[in-house]
Each structure stands twice: as C-alpha cells, then as structure tokens.
Image 1 (cartoon, rainbow, N blue to C red):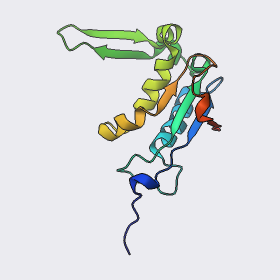
Image 2 (cartoon, rainbow, N blue to C red):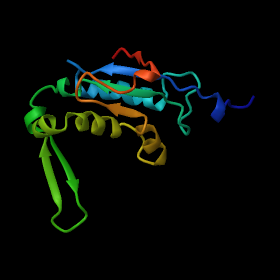
Image 3 (cartoon, rainbow, N blue to C red):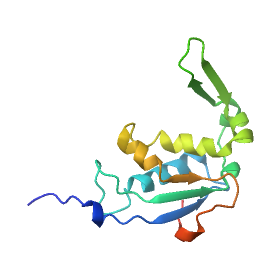
Image 4 (cartoon, rainbow, N blue to C red):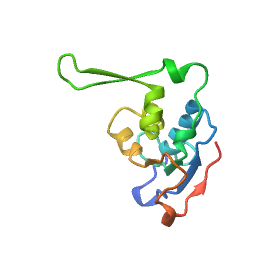
Length: 142
C-alpha cells in the first residue's frame, strides 16, 4: 500500500484567530506553531506546508511566568564586528509586543525554507483590532 501524500489542490487552508490576553507565551506559541505546521489535520505531512493561517490579537497582554520579563534577553547581530545588540523582554514588550510572540513561534518552526513559508501565514497584532475580517477567521481555543 502506498503512503498518502496530499496534492497542492487538495490542501484547504482555514483562518484562525487567537486572543493572547492572559495567555502564557510558551503555551500560546506551541499551539500556534502546531496549527501553522498543520499538525492538527489528518493529512499532516512533515515535508509539506499543509498548515492554516493564524491571527493573534492582544499581543501586548501576553503573560510571562517567573522573572522572564526582566531576565529574558533577545540578541541580534548586525554582521559587523562588535555588532551584537541585546534587548530585554520588558523593553521589547513596551516597544514592539508583537515581536515577542513572533519570535517565540518562529523558533518552534523548522529552520529552513519550509519553516519560512509557514511563518508567513502568521499575523500578530498588539491590540484587539485586525484587518482580516474578510477571511472570517474562526476562534482557536488555546
């Protein structure tokens, strides 16, 4: 018997909306990454992008446990000598709260071209408003 592999026209993509208010960052990110990968579908295939679109609202109200808000540091490098930049999670939450969720989800996706394609289906908004009403997203329980 042959292994079933979904064809491109057989993949149906749905839209989900997640309210991050009061949710723990890591638990929220794992659920969102799982939906982006398509692991909730019966036709899940590890080497294909069969996942759905996810909209996250209220990113500024996400919760971090313990002392992570003060202790967690995000690093980036410009590529030049001495170009290492460090930003605390607290400062990032004040300036760009949507990046905290985006970076957590991106780290849970495959680190290759397939993961980059999956990541493009994530939309994160700091407040409760989003511009994707036309897609009529379904609520996703986290």
